[in-house]
Length: 353
Ligand code: NAD
Image (cartoon, rainbow, N blue to C red; front, side, top):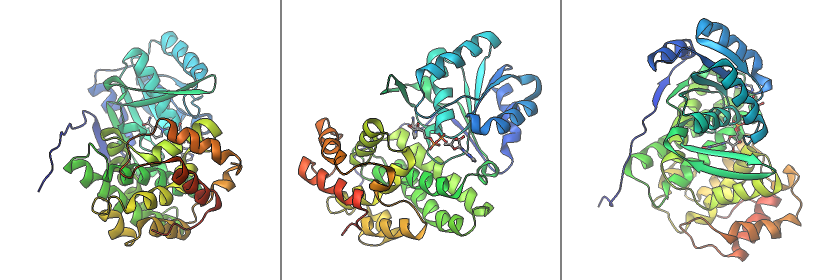
Protein backbone atom coordinates (compact mmCIF):
# COMPACT_ATOMS: atom_id res chain seq x y z
CA UNK A 1 0.00 0.00 0.00
CA UNK A 2 1.34 3.45 -0.85
CA UNK A 3 2.03 5.37 2.36
CA UNK A 4 0.79 8.92 2.86
CA UNK A 5 3.12 11.61 1.52
CA UNK A 6 3.54 15.29 0.68
CA UNK A 7 5.29 16.20 -2.56
CA UNK A 8 6.65 19.56 -3.71
CA UNK A 9 8.48 19.82 -7.05
CA UNK A 10 11.48 22.09 -7.48
CA UNK A 11 11.05 25.45 -9.20
CA UNK A 12 14.53 25.32 -10.75
CA UNK A 13 15.22 25.01 -14.48
CA UNK A 14 17.53 22.05 -15.10
CA UNK A 15 19.49 22.07 -18.37
CA UNK A 16 21.54 18.95 -19.05
CA UNK A 17 23.93 17.98 -21.84
CA UNK A 18 27.43 18.17 -23.27
CA UNK A 19 28.18 21.68 -24.53
CA UNK A 20 25.16 23.22 -22.77
CA UNK A 21 27.36 25.82 -21.05
CA UNK A 22 27.15 27.66 -24.39
CA UNK A 23 23.51 28.42 -23.53
CA UNK A 24 24.40 30.32 -20.34
CA UNK A 25 23.99 33.74 -21.98
CA UNK A 26 20.62 32.82 -23.42
CA UNK A 27 19.44 31.76 -19.95
CA UNK A 28 20.73 34.98 -18.40
CA UNK A 29 18.65 36.91 -20.93
CA UNK A 30 15.62 34.62 -20.52
CA UNK A 31 15.46 35.60 -16.85
CA UNK A 32 15.66 39.28 -17.80
CA UNK A 33 19.25 39.80 -16.62
CA UNK A 34 22.10 41.55 -18.43
CA UNK A 35 24.85 42.11 -15.83
CA UNK A 36 26.13 38.79 -14.56
CA UNK A 37 29.00 38.46 -12.09
CA UNK A 38 30.89 35.20 -12.73
CA UNK A 39 32.09 33.34 -9.62
CA UNK A 40 34.71 30.62 -9.14
CA UNK A 41 37.49 29.43 -6.83
CA UNK A 42 41.04 30.67 -7.54
CA UNK A 43 41.76 27.21 -9.00
CA UNK A 44 39.05 27.60 -11.66
CA UNK A 45 39.70 31.28 -12.48
CA UNK A 46 40.79 30.34 -16.01
CA UNK A 47 37.48 28.61 -16.76
CA UNK A 48 35.56 31.50 -15.16
CA UNK A 49 37.41 34.07 -17.30
CA UNK A 50 36.68 32.00 -20.42
CA UNK A 51 33.01 31.86 -19.50
CA UNK A 52 32.91 35.62 -18.88
CA UNK A 53 34.52 36.18 -22.28
CA UNK A 54 31.89 33.95 -23.90
CA UNK A 55 29.15 35.93 -22.13
CA UNK A 56 30.57 39.13 -23.64
CA UNK A 57 28.54 42.20 -22.67
CA UNK A 58 26.33 40.12 -20.37
CA UNK A 59 29.22 39.71 -17.87
CA UNK A 60 30.25 42.58 -15.58
CA UNK A 61 33.21 40.83 -13.97
CA UNK A 62 34.76 37.75 -12.42
CA UNK A 63 35.22 37.10 -8.69
CA UNK A 64 37.50 34.09 -8.35
CA UNK A 65 37.93 33.82 -4.57
CA UNK A 66 35.24 31.32 -3.53
CA UNK A 67 36.39 29.09 -0.64
CA UNK A 68 35.20 25.98 1.20
CA UNK A 69 32.30 26.49 3.67
CA UNK A 70 31.46 30.03 2.48
CA UNK A 71 33.54 32.18 4.89
CA UNK A 72 31.81 35.49 5.67
CA UNK A 73 34.96 37.53 4.92
CA UNK A 74 34.98 36.34 1.30
CA UNK A 75 31.25 37.01 1.04
CA UNK A 76 31.79 40.64 2.12
CA UNK A 77 34.44 41.06 -0.60
CA UNK A 78 32.12 39.59 -3.22
CA UNK A 79 29.22 41.79 -2.05
CA UNK A 80 31.40 44.88 -2.52
CA UNK A 81 32.00 43.83 -6.13
CA UNK A 82 28.28 43.11 -6.66
CA UNK A 83 27.59 46.68 -5.53
CA UNK A 84 30.43 48.27 -7.50
CA UNK A 85 29.48 46.54 -10.76
CA UNK A 86 25.70 46.81 -10.36
CA UNK A 87 25.46 43.07 -11.03
CA UNK A 88 21.90 41.81 -11.51
CA UNK A 89 22.72 38.08 -11.34
CA UNK A 90 25.49 35.63 -10.52
CA UNK A 91 26.90 32.79 -12.60
CA UNK A 92 28.61 30.21 -10.36
CA UNK A 93 31.06 27.93 -12.15
CA UNK A 94 32.54 25.21 -9.96
CA UNK A 95 31.90 22.88 -7.03
CA UNK A 96 30.04 23.38 -3.78
CA UNK A 97 32.32 26.19 -2.61
CA UNK A 98 31.48 28.37 -5.60
CA UNK A 99 27.81 27.43 -5.51
CA UNK A 100 27.82 28.39 -1.82
CA UNK A 101 29.16 31.86 -2.64
CA UNK A 102 26.44 32.38 -5.27
CA UNK A 103 23.83 31.22 -2.77
CA UNK A 104 24.95 33.59 -0.03
CA UNK A 105 24.88 36.52 -2.49
CA UNK A 106 21.33 35.51 -3.49
CA UNK A 107 20.38 35.15 0.18
CA UNK A 108 21.47 38.74 0.81
CA UNK A 109 20.20 40.31 -2.42
CA UNK A 110 17.69 37.88 -4.01
CA UNK A 111 19.67 38.09 -7.28
CA UNK A 112 19.00 35.20 -9.69
CA UNK A 113 21.65 32.46 -9.80
CA UNK A 114 22.86 30.47 -12.79
CA UNK A 115 24.95 27.53 -11.61
CA UNK A 116 27.28 25.39 -13.70
CA UNK A 117 28.40 22.57 -11.37
CA UNK A 118 31.74 20.87 -11.94
CA UNK A 119 31.66 18.37 -9.03
CA UNK A 120 28.96 15.98 -7.83
CA UNK A 121 28.13 17.26 -4.31
CA UNK A 122 24.65 18.55 -5.25
CA UNK A 123 24.40 21.95 -3.55
CA UNK A 124 23.17 23.55 -6.80
CA UNK A 125 19.73 21.96 -6.40
CA UNK A 126 19.17 22.54 -2.68
CA UNK A 127 17.64 25.55 -0.89
CA UNK A 128 20.31 25.14 1.82
CA UNK A 129 23.21 27.49 2.58
CA UNK A 130 26.01 26.69 4.99
CA UNK A 131 28.40 29.51 5.92
CA UNK A 132 31.21 30.02 8.42
CA UNK A 133 32.27 32.90 10.63
CA UNK A 134 34.98 32.68 13.27
CA UNK A 135 35.19 28.91 12.81
CA UNK A 136 31.44 28.43 13.44
CA UNK A 137 29.25 26.95 10.71
CA UNK A 138 25.59 27.90 10.48
CA UNK A 139 22.97 26.68 8.04
CA UNK A 140 19.91 28.44 6.65
CA UNK A 141 17.18 27.32 4.25
CA UNK A 142 15.01 29.45 1.99
CA UNK A 143 13.43 29.62 -1.43
CA UNK A 144 15.70 32.51 -2.50
CA UNK A 145 18.73 30.27 -1.86
CA UNK A 146 17.69 27.70 -4.48
CA UNK A 147 19.40 28.58 -7.80
CA UNK A 148 17.00 29.48 -10.62
CA UNK A 149 18.90 27.77 -13.45
CA UNK A 150 21.36 24.85 -13.27
CA UNK A 151 23.35 23.97 -16.37
CA UNK A 152 24.90 20.50 -16.15
CA UNK A 153 27.58 20.23 -18.82
CA UNK A 154 29.57 16.98 -18.44
CA UNK A 155 32.38 18.41 -20.62
CA UNK A 156 33.35 20.58 -17.64
CA UNK A 157 33.82 17.55 -15.39
CA UNK A 158 36.36 15.63 -17.47
CA UNK A 159 39.17 17.54 -15.71
CA UNK A 160 37.92 16.69 -12.22
CA UNK A 161 40.84 14.72 -10.70
CA UNK A 162 40.09 11.03 -10.21
CA UNK A 163 40.38 11.15 -6.41
CA UNK A 164 37.82 14.01 -6.24
CA UNK A 165 35.63 12.26 -8.79
CA UNK A 166 35.43 9.22 -6.52
CA UNK A 167 34.92 11.04 -3.21
CA UNK A 168 32.50 13.60 -4.67
CA UNK A 169 30.51 10.75 -6.23
CA UNK A 170 30.31 8.90 -2.90
CA UNK A 171 29.34 12.19 -1.21
CA UNK A 172 26.38 12.40 -3.65
CA UNK A 173 25.49 8.74 -3.09
CA UNK A 174 25.28 9.41 0.65
CA UNK A 175 22.48 11.94 0.02
CA UNK A 176 20.52 9.31 -1.92
CA UNK A 177 21.19 6.52 0.58
CA UNK A 178 19.70 8.59 3.40
CA UNK A 179 16.84 9.78 1.19
CA UNK A 180 15.74 6.15 0.79
CA UNK A 181 14.74 5.93 4.46
CA UNK A 182 13.94 9.60 5.14
CA UNK A 183 10.85 10.10 7.29
CA UNK A 184 9.45 12.62 4.80
CA UNK A 185 10.32 10.61 1.66
CA UNK A 186 7.81 10.45 -1.17
CA UNK A 187 7.50 8.20 -4.23
CA UNK A 188 9.36 10.67 -6.46
CA UNK A 189 12.25 11.21 -4.03
CA UNK A 190 12.65 7.43 -3.66
CA UNK A 191 12.71 6.92 -7.43
CA UNK A 192 15.25 9.71 -7.85
CA UNK A 193 17.44 8.35 -5.05
CA UNK A 194 17.47 4.83 -6.49
CA UNK A 195 18.20 6.11 -9.99
CA UNK A 196 20.99 8.36 -8.69
CA UNK A 197 22.62 5.47 -6.82
CA UNK A 198 22.38 3.30 -9.91
CA UNK A 199 23.96 6.01 -12.10
CA UNK A 200 26.97 6.30 -9.77
CA UNK A 201 27.15 2.54 -9.24
CA UNK A 202 27.71 2.23 -12.96
CA UNK A 203 29.75 5.39 -13.60
CA UNK A 204 32.37 5.36 -10.81
CA UNK A 205 34.05 2.02 -11.75
CA UNK A 206 34.16 3.19 -15.38
CA UNK A 207 35.73 6.51 -14.35
CA UNK A 208 38.27 4.70 -12.18
CA UNK A 209 39.33 2.82 -15.32
CA UNK A 210 39.20 5.89 -17.57
CA UNK A 211 38.52 9.36 -16.06
CA UNK A 212 38.01 10.75 -19.58
CA UNK A 213 35.12 8.36 -20.39
CA UNK A 214 32.53 10.87 -21.60
CA UNK A 215 29.59 8.47 -21.24
CA UNK A 216 30.51 7.77 -17.61
CA UNK A 217 31.06 11.50 -16.93
CA UNK A 218 27.59 12.16 -18.24
CA UNK A 219 26.07 9.36 -16.11
CA UNK A 220 27.84 10.63 -12.99
CA UNK A 221 26.61 14.20 -13.50
CA UNK A 222 23.09 12.88 -14.09
CA UNK A 223 23.45 11.02 -10.78
CA UNK A 224 24.65 14.23 -9.12
CA UNK A 225 21.47 16.04 -10.16
CA UNK A 226 19.28 13.22 -8.79
CA UNK A 227 21.20 12.81 -5.52
CA UNK A 228 21.42 16.57 -4.95
CA UNK A 229 17.72 16.98 -5.60
CA UNK A 230 16.76 14.48 -2.92
CA UNK A 231 19.18 16.15 -0.49
CA UNK A 232 17.20 19.35 -1.03
CA UNK A 233 13.84 17.62 -0.77
CA UNK A 234 13.88 15.27 2.24
CA UNK A 235 15.52 15.14 5.66
CA UNK A 236 18.92 13.54 6.25
CA UNK A 237 19.81 11.33 9.24
CA UNK A 238 22.75 9.78 11.12
CA UNK A 239 25.20 9.79 8.21
CA UNK A 240 24.92 13.53 7.62
CA UNK A 241 24.96 14.27 11.36
CA UNK A 242 28.25 12.40 11.79
CA UNK A 243 29.81 14.03 8.70
CA UNK A 244 28.77 17.50 9.88
CA UNK A 245 30.26 16.71 13.29
CA UNK A 246 33.57 15.54 11.85
CA UNK A 247 33.82 18.36 9.29
CA UNK A 248 32.54 21.10 11.61
CA UNK A 249 34.43 20.22 14.80
CA UNK A 250 37.51 18.36 13.51
CA UNK A 251 37.94 19.99 10.09
CA UNK A 252 38.04 16.71 8.17
CA UNK A 253 37.68 17.21 4.39
CA UNK A 254 34.04 17.24 3.23
CA UNK A 255 33.79 14.70 0.41
CA UNK A 256 36.36 12.26 1.85
CA UNK A 257 34.52 12.17 5.18
CA UNK A 258 31.25 11.29 3.43
CA UNK A 259 33.01 8.66 1.33
CA UNK A 260 34.53 6.91 4.36
CA UNK A 261 31.44 7.06 6.56
CA UNK A 262 28.90 5.85 3.97
CA UNK A 263 29.41 2.05 4.27
CA UNK A 264 29.37 2.30 8.07
CA UNK A 265 26.21 4.39 8.41
CA UNK A 266 24.39 2.27 5.82
CA UNK A 267 25.52 -0.87 7.67
CA UNK A 268 24.31 0.63 10.96
CA UNK A 269 20.82 1.26 9.56
CA UNK A 270 20.53 -1.76 7.25
CA UNK A 271 18.83 -4.06 9.73
CA UNK A 272 16.27 -1.42 10.75
CA UNK A 273 15.02 -0.57 7.24
CA UNK A 274 15.80 -3.45 4.87
CA UNK A 275 12.83 -2.70 2.60
CA UNK A 276 13.73 0.96 2.14
CA UNK A 277 17.37 0.05 1.47
CA UNK A 278 16.45 -2.58 -1.13
CA UNK A 279 17.75 -0.39 -4.03
CA UNK A 280 21.17 -0.40 -2.32
CA UNK A 281 20.97 -4.16 -1.77
CA UNK A 282 20.07 -4.63 -5.45
CA UNK A 283 23.18 -2.67 -6.44
CA UNK A 284 25.72 -3.73 -3.82
CA UNK A 285 24.45 -7.00 -2.29
CA UNK A 286 22.21 -8.13 0.54
CA UNK A 287 24.58 -6.67 3.17
CA UNK A 288 24.70 -3.16 1.67
CA UNK A 289 27.19 -1.66 4.16
CA UNK A 290 29.70 -4.40 3.40
CA UNK A 291 28.84 -4.16 -0.30
CA UNK A 292 29.49 -0.41 -0.34
CA UNK A 293 32.78 -0.97 1.51
CA UNK A 294 33.87 -3.40 -1.23
CA UNK A 295 32.65 -0.96 -3.91
CA UNK A 296 34.80 1.76 -2.27
CA UNK A 297 37.81 -0.56 -2.40
CA UNK A 298 37.13 -1.34 -6.07
CA UNK A 299 37.07 2.35 -7.03
CA UNK A 300 40.04 3.31 -4.84
CA UNK A 301 38.15 5.47 -2.32
CA UNK A 302 39.65 6.38 1.07
CA UNK A 303 38.32 3.97 3.71
CA UNK A 304 39.72 4.98 7.12
CA UNK A 305 39.15 8.20 9.09
CA UNK A 306 42.65 7.88 10.55
CA UNK A 307 44.00 8.66 7.07
CA UNK A 308 42.28 12.09 7.25
CA UNK A 309 44.40 13.16 10.21
CA UNK A 310 41.73 12.47 12.83
CA UNK A 311 43.30 11.08 16.02
CA UNK A 312 41.81 8.12 17.88
CA UNK A 313 41.52 10.38 20.94
CA UNK A 314 39.10 12.63 18.97
CA UNK A 315 36.57 9.81 18.63
CA UNK A 316 35.15 10.19 22.16
CA UNK A 317 34.36 13.87 21.64
CA UNK A 318 33.00 13.15 18.13
CA UNK A 319 30.63 10.54 19.60
CA UNK A 320 29.51 13.06 22.25
CA UNK A 321 28.80 15.80 19.70
CA UNK A 322 27.10 13.46 17.20
CA UNK A 323 24.69 12.19 19.85
CA UNK A 324 24.02 15.47 21.68
CA UNK A 325 21.28 16.80 19.36
CA UNK A 326 20.83 13.83 17.04
CA UNK A 327 18.89 14.02 13.78
CA UNK A 328 16.00 11.57 13.43
CA UNK A 329 17.39 8.17 12.39
CA UNK A 330 15.57 4.93 11.49
CA UNK A 331 17.60 2.96 14.07
CA UNK A 332 17.71 4.44 17.57
CA UNK A 333 21.05 6.01 18.41
CA UNK A 334 23.01 5.70 21.62
CA UNK A 335 26.46 7.00 22.40
CA UNK A 336 28.09 3.57 22.81
CA UNK A 337 26.98 2.30 19.41
CA UNK A 338 28.02 5.55 17.66
CA UNK A 339 31.42 5.43 19.39
CA UNK A 340 31.79 1.87 18.13
CA UNK A 341 30.76 2.86 14.59
CA UNK A 342 33.31 5.71 14.63
CA UNK A 343 36.04 3.31 15.79
CA UNK A 344 35.29 1.00 12.84
CA UNK A 345 35.33 3.93 10.40
CA UNK A 346 38.56 5.24 11.93
CA UNK A 347 40.26 1.85 11.54
CA UNK A 348 38.73 1.17 8.11
CA UNK A 349 37.10 -2.09 9.23
CA UNK A 350 34.68 -3.74 6.79
CA UNK A 351 31.10 -3.50 8.17
CA UNK A 352 29.45 -6.88 8.86
CA UNK A 353 26.13 -5.89 7.23
P1 NAD B 1 34.93 22.59 -3.85
O1 NAD B 1 33.87 23.34 -4.53
O2 NAD B 1 35.65 23.27 -2.73
O3 NAD B 1 35.98 22.11 -4.93
C1 NAD B 1 37.26 21.60 -4.51
C2 NAD B 1 38.36 22.07 -5.46
O4 NAD B 1 38.20 21.41 -6.72
C3 NAD B 1 38.30 23.56 -5.74
O5 NAD B 1 39.61 24.06 -5.83
C4 NAD B 1 37.63 23.62 -7.10
O6 NAD B 1 37.95 24.76 -7.82
C5 NAD B 1 38.17 22.37 -7.75
N1 NAD B 1 37.32 21.85 -8.83
C6 NAD B 1 35.96 21.77 -8.83
N2 NAD B 1 35.54 21.22 -9.98
C7 NAD B 1 36.63 20.95 -10.72
C8 NAD B 1 36.84 20.36 -12.02
N3 NAD B 1 35.81 19.90 -12.75
N4 NAD B 1 38.10 20.25 -12.46
C9 NAD B 1 39.15 20.65 -11.71
N5 NAD B 1 39.02 21.20 -10.47
C10 NAD B 1 37.76 21.34 -9.98
O7 NAD B 1 34.41 21.18 -3.24
P2 NAD B 1 33.02 20.40 -3.37
O8 NAD B 1 33.25 19.06 -2.76
O9 NAD B 1 32.45 20.49 -4.72
O10 NAD B 1 32.05 21.23 -2.41
C11 NAD B 1 32.18 21.17 -1.01
C12 NAD B 1 31.39 22.30 -0.39
O11 NAD B 1 30.02 22.17 -0.77
C13 NAD B 1 31.41 22.30 1.13
O12 NAD B 1 31.58 23.63 1.58
C14 NAD B 1 30.03 21.77 1.50
O13 NAD B 1 29.60 22.22 2.76
C15 NAD B 1 29.19 22.32 0.38
N6 NAD B 1 27.93 21.59 0.15
C16 NAD B 1 26.78 22.28 0.32
C17 NAD B 1 25.57 21.64 0.13
C18 NAD B 1 24.29 22.41 0.30
O14 NAD B 1 23.23 21.90 -0.03
N7 NAD B 1 24.35 23.61 0.79
C19 NAD B 1 25.52 20.30 -0.26
C20 NAD B 1 26.73 19.61 -0.43
C21 NAD B 1 27.94 20.27 -0.21
